[in-house]
Image (cartoon, rainbow, N blue to C red; front, side, top):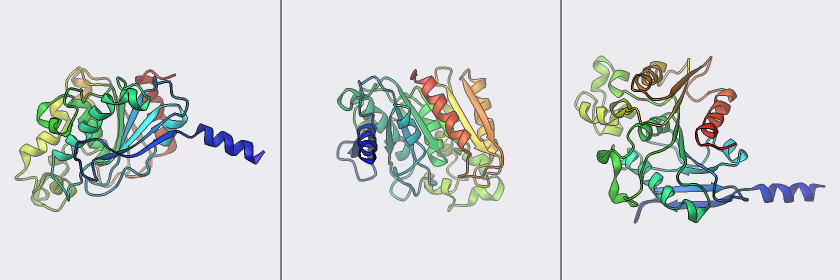
Length: 275
């Protein structure tokens, strides 16, 4: 009986493609891990997971995306250049390069490259949100990173407690702090990097052709104020974008309850047309 169970688990395990480079001559940070259902017919949509860590730490290893595999979707978990290696917009350029690479290689790996969703948390939530609103914005595209004929647009966005408006997060004298995660991302204090902060703000690019958004945020978050997500959701809705916001009660920064993850999975399945 144990042997049969082990054989079932093995047969159900996804095909894995580890440390795939998504940019020509890219560095170690410009790699992804790809998981495709074993019995893939090439019709499964793809969800890209973007890790958090304040743009200065974290990796593609781990994340809540395994529940997507159980639902039969393909998943790519990506790394990107951290702020210690390069300042913004390197991070979003990497994310867009990963989208373009995956779209170009869907048939090769066995998923539907025309249906790509993105899910991120914290700094990854910010990058996911920016992917959603800035599709094909040339200033953020990083076309030299490859597959420049492909679109970087995504078809659904799930943003878990991502920072949005850096200046609003650091009022008053806090704008002079050059050691905050946001300042390190932009390469200087927000007081002198306001233009770059605007460039990094997903709200800057909101338009009615943006994909549907699901935004979730814990009401006890002490690092990213919940108002960041609330105001972003209102901006999306005012711009004609389908956006839903959920407050997760008694939840801090990295402690969103299980129902939040289920909502994300259900949302991504629905928006990507997966039964």
